[in-house]
Length: 345
Image 1 (cartoon, rainbow, N blue to C red):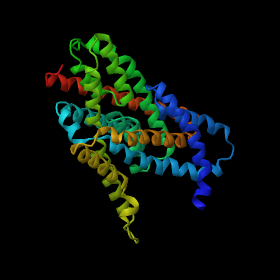
Image 2: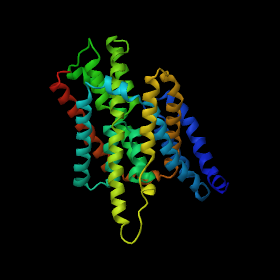
Image 3: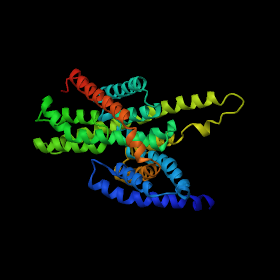
Image 4: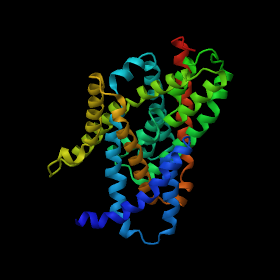
């Protein structure tokens, strides 16, 4: 009861921001509910002089609710279907993810960008934008300002991709009679599902392809989402080992306290979906879990926005934007090169 009494004001404030953000996100999918929630949260934060009564609720929402969102995200993944239909694009997905992570590491060392921001932008750029950041942030113990900054950078390049990719596809000479090549390109080189959908749908409408490009792009994008599992588990292992080594001097290490078990639950949720749909359970049964996951992410982003200093964020965003741009260019180059090698383009 004491926890509820302390946490409800902060949670209620997040809920008040999340509900309109969720609705607005439906009307403006390229921007998306999470980004809208962060922006509203940062604006509201400027109007609150004393946040002490909200702190407990904000902390619970930005940490625990974010973890629950990732677990629920697992119910949207049928591992067998995604692996089967995404087999063709798997080498490209691996190549683009590797390119982004390597570039993020190099730019981090060259420009001395904080390691947690570099990790979040590298993972967000290479896998699935905000969802990947949501999964990675608790694993590496990133603070709210680092998450907000990373999501903002990813959002900026999402919007650019949705606007520029169809024109870029024409300039690069992608086939107008089939949406396959551009679908693979959009699915591997754009990091957020909303922008992948926008670019692919635009290509379909340009050449009257129905939903051929969109279907291909979304399938490839879902295959990319699976990379959350090995990457977050690898980061969890490195983080656990680091904390374990730090705690070995004179104290016992409790693995339960430092290992992010919510990632294991995410995997289990994916396995449940895969087994259930394999036995004939309609995929639509899991749609509410997926929608709840999206809302929880928006709820957590509202808390992160409320905990973020907007002025400080704007002043410190120069280097992260350069990092995001480098990752973006690297992913585009890797996707095109591997498509050419595999004779898709």
